[in-house]
Picture (spheres, chains in turn green, blue):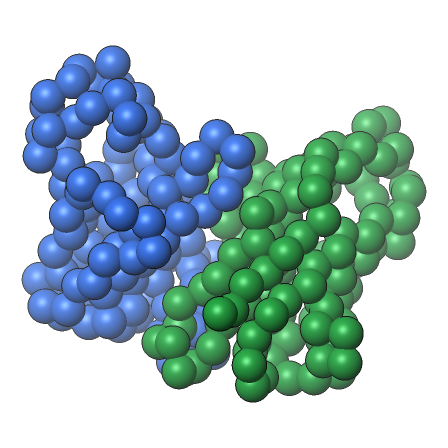
Length: 113
Length: 113
């Protein structure tokens, strides 16, 4: 079946450090891939997405590239800020499943000043 | 910004009470979802709807029920709350036109004493 696996957290970084959160998926065909972010006490917000192989999604300095050959969608940011502290979820969606999202388990990021 | 609303944001209630968590969206999306989020952050799909008068159970068994009488409204009801129902409940919506990107409400944090 379809699944998403994220690197375990929590991840603790100093401000301005480089961030990578690994995400790999299992799915047949060509799913769409998403990164969502959840700030404390809030719902999830879409951070970026990619709908086909080699697409790069980007937003707010975050980037992720859809790599079909390695079934990965790793999230990166060159210089994190304290305000990036949140929980990050990788997810996939397939049209033939009516838009249901399959989420990874979430990775908590804490950025220290 | 997503136009999806959940009320109440926080609810503390005693065992055995009947409760309804409200979710409304003004985007005209046909698909709506309820997730339960445990303290370990993982998201579990408990109900979804593909349109008016269409509801399905999700991947995680839940004692709650849902209804979809209007496109914009997708309430969740617990007939008799128990401490095991204590959790964060997130509502979301999506549609085919946006590639099934899901928009989330702010969540309801339910505590059953």
